[in-house]
Image 1 (cartoon, rainbow, N blue to C red):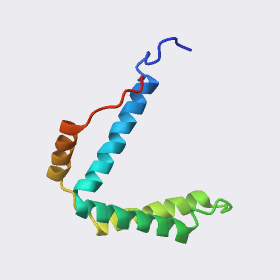
Image 2: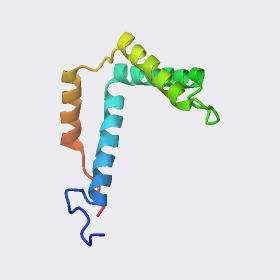
Image 3: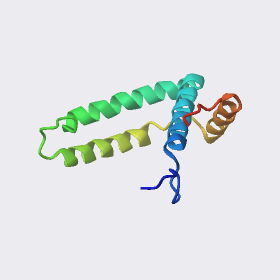
Image 4: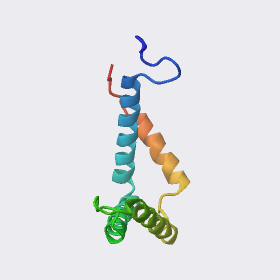
Length: 109
């Protein structure tokens, strides 16, 4: 084991935590500042939960859990195709720029 985390091309644990925190904060910012996307995201989560329940992918005693998970995933992809995200690429980049201007990174070191 290395005495210097972050060697061999891997980020140090505190760098990884900082990046994870930034991604989570950005996702929350997008939901808070794009109401149509937040509503769509909520409907998508409900659909995913419903598909997992209907296919038995949430039942850990299910012997064919992987088949059930695959079926739920296929149904969610079909749902995504029928219900595209309301967030355009321009919205995505605008929100990311706004977020970056105000984001103060946490110090995990």
